[in-house]
Length: 200
Image (tube, rainbow, N blue to C red; front, side):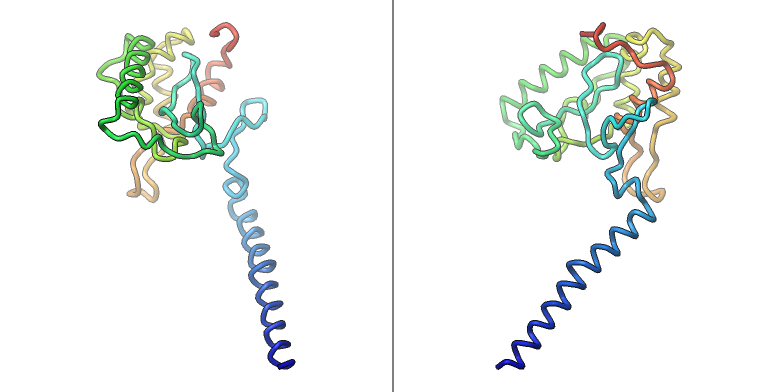
């Protein structure tokens, strides 16, 4: 009995050391050495070097001088990284219908010079509620509003969008996309940071 207990104890200790200490330390060390930025949350910094968010987590931009993300159902006010999730409203939901109708009216009013209909992703939330990306088409649809609010030519804003388009992963996974936070930071680097207080 004592011999079996000692074997079990040794096995437990070895397993704890290997899986509870050695493996996590090795994986942490490798991730820090090989892709430190991703291992630390893909944090994004502004032109002053201050952390302003993560490129992996969508956040709200409501000022007309910035590109707006997809709607979010994460948390009470949306964009809550501690409460990721969708609204679970079905296609027959009156609440979903009312929200989309309101969003369509708001987007159209804010961007009267836009060409074509409002892209669908600007009125539909992602499953996580925290999708940080838009399609290039959804970003380009907002160019007229952003250009007008910043007082620059639309073509210059379009160039910033096109420069921020990310291709497919490994050339064939997924679709081309634009990270909204990276795009807005690129706008500030190119045209300067607008006075947020003047927009409120």
